[in-house]
Amino acid sequence: MSEKRIDGSSTTVLYGQADEISWIQRCLLLLNTFYYQILAIVTMVMFWIFFETYALDATRLWHLVLTTAAYVPLMAAAIILFSEDNITTIHISRTKRYTIHGVLLFISCLAVTAGISIETDAKRRLGRTHFQSNHAILGLVSWILMFLSVLIGLMAANTRTFSSYIKPVVIKLVHNFLGLAAFAIGIGSLFEMLTFFERNSSQTVYDGIYVALVFVAIWSGLAALKSLYGQIKSVFF
Image (cartoon, rainbow, N blue to C red; front, side, top):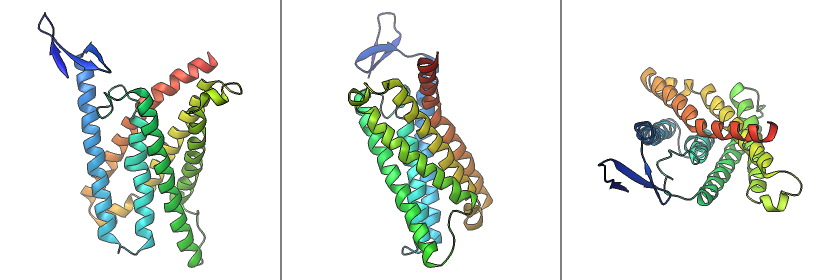
C-alpha cells in the first residue's frame, strides 16, 4: 500500500509503518518476485518430465517427486521466508512467519522421509544395495540434517522452556546452520541426478533447470546466511 508525501515522493506501508522505499529495495522486491516465478517454473518443468517419463504406479516416480518437492519448492520457500524483501510475506508478522516456516520445513522433512523410504524399499525388494551413489549419500546426509533441524526448530519455538539450559540465540544458530546445510546438500543431491533431464528431454531443458536451480539455491540462502552471520557474532564475539 503506497501513499504520497508532501514533497511528492512515494512511501510504502510495511509492517504497519510508512517507510520510504529506495531504488535498491525496489530492485530486491522485483528480484524476489522473479525468484518465485523461477521457483514455480522449474518445479513445474521438473514434475512434468517426471510424470512424462514414468507410469503413475512406478516407485521411482514418487521417489523423484517427493524428494524434489521437499527442496524445490518447500524448503526453498521455508528458508527465504525471513528475508526482509520477501514479497509473499512482506505484510505478515514475524511470529506468523515462524509458524509458516515450521509447517513448510516439517512437510519437507516428511516428503524426504517418504521419498527415501520408497526408494530404499524398492531396492530391498530387488536385492540391491542402497546409498551407494553420490546422489543417494548426499540425500541421506541431507535428510539427517533436516530431521535434526526440525527438532532444534521445535526447541527454538519454545525458548522459554529451554532458556535455562541453553541460550535462545545458540538454539537459533544451530537450527539455522543445520537447515542451511541440509538445504545445500539436498540441492547438491538434486544436481547429481540432473543428467536425468538431459536423457529424458533435451540439452536446452537441462541447461535451463541447471541455471534455475543455481539461482534458487543462492537466492534462497542469502537472507539465512545474513541471519546466521549475526547469530555467530552474538554467540562468539
